[in-house]
Length: 294
Image (cartoon, rainbow, N blue to C red):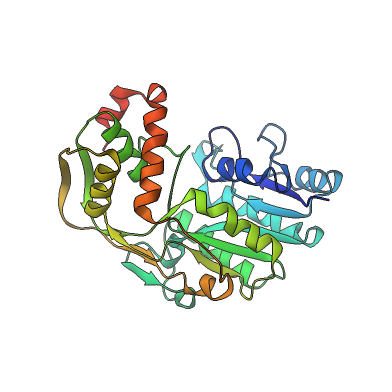
């Protein structure tokens, strides 16, 4: 009998949740209600849904930033969703949610950061503070696990603002590739995430937070070169600002020490797959919007 899992944030306009819903549907009985069917800010609605459907595990991928009293309340909404899930965590075997490298405070370089470095500085952004607070709660919990994402890329992401998808789309239309400012980044391919989720669902991890990353940083200019290689094209690459931006990279040694058979797609192969996806879906890309994107 397949395990029943609830995936939040898996709607048609989502990225991580939508990919997970597609990949895990044949291995688990997946419940992925749209926002119109399940409001995560409503604890009673969440409790009723979990109990009525016999949910055994929750994979929380939703980000909820509606207008609240005329202003965006990013911290408030993300935390209330998480706290509602934490409150019901005793009703399920396990809760997995996606943290962020922003927990380590993006005011500074984040360079091959390890989980043990958490808490050295406290982030000041609402998003970073929310994820920081969630990790404190996860570490004190019995069955909540933070799968901390840094850069993640793949199909269904917002190609007009997400770096690697934007480069792939521009290459597909023979447009110059643009980079706002050089830095080193660690990007994780979305196709590698479902096996990681399966491992966490089927095992009892030693810790409650893990960096989910490639563990191999690249300068953005080198990544642009990989996209051109994937496309088989020679196009201009323009760096819009001089100097360097802050690095955003992490170590995945903690995860690899437990998940010994983890296999990750090399970045060049992943970019070739992503480029082919956009080549096949060019009709769905707004050329004028793409051309003006940076």
